[in-house]
Image 1: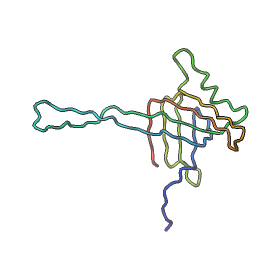
Image 2: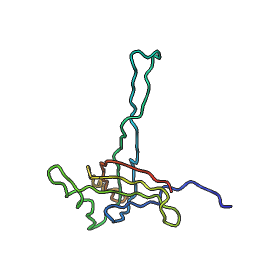
Image 3: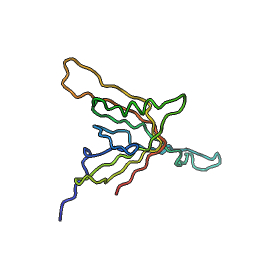
Image 4: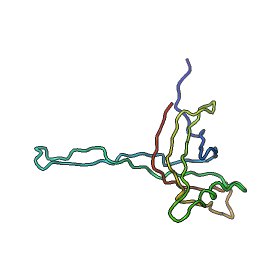
Length: 144
């Protein structure tokens, strides 16, 4: 019988608009239910009850190396017109050793709210990394 190990987090892919994009890092895949508190004034208990309220999603951050003539980030960014922008559904998959999805995060109606270009250092010895922050309207998680 083979030993079971947790999945490593370094083998993943990101897909948007039918295109698979390579990223160095993805963060912000968080979902939180905001609590509601309530207490009836005639309640004999002197404490509030807690109920689940609205769902809150954090911004998703994507980081990747800068490649010459790869402008997909900026093409998406440039779809902004007045108060609209192209929205995309994004799928992030944690892959197994056979490159098959094991855990899938699906992000609904995402749009880029911030692009951060790489920092520049004359004495540095690092890869140029660009960052995109996304707003979205929903996150579901599937663990196959």
